[in-house]
Amino acid sequence: MSLRIVVCVKYVPDATGDRHFAEDLTVDRDDVDGLLSELDEYAVEQALQIKEAADDAEITVLTVGPEDANDALRKALSMGADKGVHVEDEDLHGTDAVGTSLVLAKAIEKTGYDLVVCGMASTDGTMGVLPAMLAERLGVPQVTQLSEVSVEGGVVKGRRDGDTATEQLEASLPAVVSVTDQSGEARYPSFKGIMAAKKKPVESLELDDLDIDADEVGLEGAWTKVEDATERPARTAGTIVKDEGEGAKQLAEFLAGQKFI
Ligand SMILES: Cc1cc2nc3c(=O)[nH]c(=O)nc-3n(C[C@H](O)[C@H](O)[C@H](O)COP(=O)(O)OP(=O)(O)OC[C@H]3O[C@@H](n4cnc5c(N)ncnc54)[C@H](O)[C@@H]3O)c2cc1C
Image 1 (cartoon, rainbow, N blue to C red):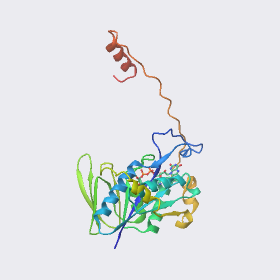
Image 2: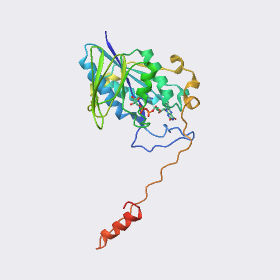
Image 3: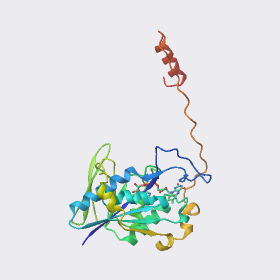
Image 4: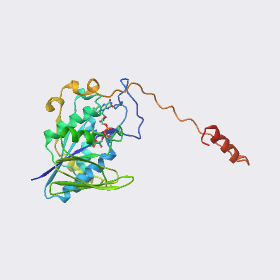
């Protein structure tokens, strides 16, 4: 039977762009270009390698996000994933991690899965909590923060590198894993892959399709609330110390004035 892999890919604001909060203190997504979270490219890469090593496997890439999140799916499809699922609904605006995990879990159950692969964290929220929340909601084991992953005979195996130890972990399928940026460079989509991605199927789902009520998600359903946010002050021009014989002294005085020494 085919190994069904679902990769969760997030569409995030480009970190090199000028990012702002909107009036309701949610991220202003209209103001900045987005892209597939770079950390989720590692998840797609590992899924592709698992598929290449398997007799028969199919990769579905799943995103919960606005209309433009389709770009994240197309990038993953151009890398080699087989099909996409896009959950989009205006009631999702302001959804927090708990709500996002509910939507992802329902979409994963609807799609069908043996293995869910996530990135180690998104590059915007960077909470790194979604994989654990998903495993809890799906009622399956989680093996997170893997720098090496493989599937053999209904078991997912992986290596987790910590500060003090390296662990070899395994779990029976179905399971949720997350992979780190040490798991191996993600491939670039080929021209053929980009052209093929245009024809790959992407299923669009709304909250109704997943039996989720609007009040379970969005700002209303959020367990967390951003009370206040202050923009970081603009950078000031630095102090230039000209060395005319007293440079070291002036440098020391400057550092002492800033309480660095
Ligand atoms: C339409 C929409 C609007 C939102 N608005 C807000 C808001 O205003 N304020 C707010 O606090 N939060 C908002 N969120 C939620 C927020 O953007 C995060 O998705 C959520 O809080 C999870 O936190 P994280 O990104 O840090 O996930 P992490 O736990 O860091 O993510 C780990 C992994 O989970 C997977 N993953 C995470 N998010 C998604 C996703 N959306 N789709 C697919 N895979 C995913 C990826 O594999 C990722 O690498 C919104 C989400 C959506 C979909």
